[in-house]
Image (cartoon, rainbow, N blue to C red; front, side):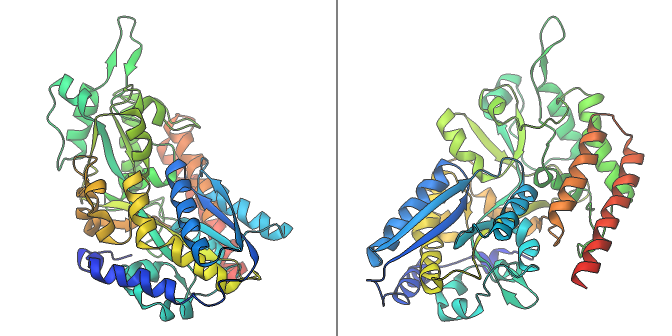
Length: 425
């Protein structure tokens, strides 16, 4: 995904036209009676945004009842894929699904969602999104996903802990500088027990990717067609994270749960997260900011984005499209961005005083976009993620050496890709 600032510089006037265009397209038939089910993802901020979008939708369609379920994606997108596919197997499905780039190929390759090319062409306001978002939302030449918000992984850090330690706030930094700072931010009591961790070595696939990208490598081949785990730079990246735990003692071994709560409580100085964490940071009144990920060979981080798809079997195609138009509107994106959800796909929605008010370096989200790569998301993502995380966790906990873990993960990943090729042709 080649996101750049030019494609993402959207005018407020054009975005206002977007909202008008999408709504006017569905003004007819407002007296229709129907039920729609929406499967959305996120937390309180996202639920509020979706609820408000539905209220606007119901002004035009007062007799359409919309039921919403929210999935916090607590265990990753691979499990979400499995969950949604089981719904289609059982026939208990929603009409509209919110999802993310990690799932796009998994779902589109199975033909469960409606191609949306005509919908996009009929609503010219969609052209004000970054074209690359629609490109990444396509599969074999058809658009299946309407983009909404995105997240790139940044280093989120506690400003108070930096100040207390006499450490300047980070700007552009290297792996070695990051490592040195993480050591200084790790505090132990008189018994040698850690009372403050310098960093949380990540436990999720998305969070780990920048440590590969900033070293000029990836766990998968550039075209996502197979494993790249035998690249020496992959082992080097994993060894760096391993040593943060076992040599420097700045992080615990990654567990099942993330350490968001410990970060909010001031027990962890730095974590790797996207903008979605802001809703909980604001609730905790935490004095934090963001910085670019530290670089080994290049300043590249990972990006992923959310989108809406429509069930191919929905009985209410036009209503589902009208709802998706509202769910992706400038109002919805502005509210989600200011509320602490993802970064709006429409840049003007990320230039409001409310969005820029916090964190202090909020403009850095868009400034970092030229230095992003999409999270590797092949059609067998649910298998790839589980295989990678299983070996990653084993390597981080010293259950297997870095060398053996990379070799064994490589074999399993390539077996998965062979099965995928046999299935898809």
